[in-house]
Length: 214
Image (cartoon, rainbow, N blue to C red; front, side, top):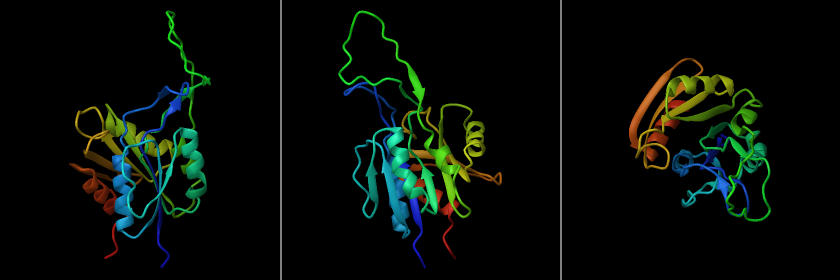
C-alpha cells in the first residue's frame, strides 16, 4: 500500500520592517515538530514547512525552512496537492509592514507610525482547494472564548478538525513543553486531552484524527 503523506507547518513567521527588525510571535515550533516525529513513527511521508525555530530537525522528515507568511504559502502550495493530511500548526503572522525599508530604520525623536497590511491566510487559501479524501486540520491558539473561536475557525476556513489551545496561561501551550488541547470536528464531536508533554499530545491528535487500523 502506498504510504500516506502528511504536510505540517510549524513555528512562527517573521515579517520584516527592515533588514534587522521584524514582526513575529512567541511560537517555538515544538508542537509542529512533535507531530512531524509522530507521523514518521507511524510510517507516513512527512513534509515539515517550518518558520525560524531553534529545534533539531526530526529524523526522517523533509524540512523546508521559510521566514515569511508568503514564503510559507509558496512552500506548501505544491506539496498540498499531493498530501493526504495537512496540519497547520504554524503561528502565521496576520499582518506585515506595507513598506519594508532596505536599510535599518534609525531612531528619531519623532513618533513612528507603522502601516500594516494583511498577510496571505495560508490555511484558508489551501483548505479552499482541498479534494475529497484530504483532511485539513487547523490550530486555534486563543486567550479567551476558546471553543467558540475555534468552532468559528473550523467553519470559516473549511477545516475537518481544529485543535484549540488556551495560550493565556504561563508555562503551557505556546513556547512551552506541555500543552492542553480540545479537538473539534465538523460532526460536532469534542475530544479533550492534557496537560501533557507535546509528544503525548501529538500521539493523541493522530489517534483521534486518523485512528490506527485494528
